[in-house]
Length: 223
Image (cartoon, rainbow, N blue to C red):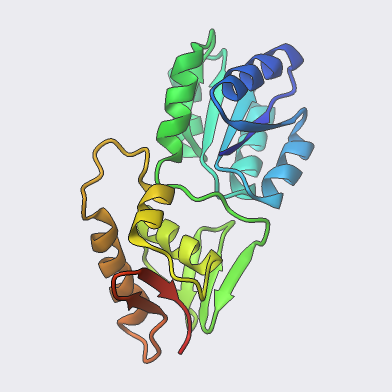
């Protein structure tokens, strides 16, 4: 799993990087907001860890810009423990907020939690097949110009199949990629998700794109 750490404070950046690398993550670092946004837009990250300093105006701009630049979840780390700061961040792009001094194992646990059910976005901003379009930065799926109302897990499965369009992807491979770290995932979670995805993806349209290959798995392709 690739993680982007954005932090202008060098000692803090080094500590975050060290904790994550020692826990098996592949870590890239950005030392300022501009570099962080460029790297986030390039894609391929499963998580962004953002070290925020205060005062407020610069931090607000940085969080909004960064969270709009990529589809990966953002965890904010800060010395600010005020309810106002936490609430603002959680309402404006952050999926978690941790206060320094930071406990390394807690950061790793929160990181793994936020990455559950996520598939890292590839560098391409848009993927397509026939009249299906996935806009990754906006986390939006459309068919024939009509938006598909997908859950996070449905979007993740669709992205995985679209990345491997034309190839048969086994049920076990889908589970491994998306639910492997989910402690409470049921044994039929792939079947249920595929069924719901097929209803939304193919139900209203004449051309089927999602196909079941008996005893092998699923394939996304146009026939």
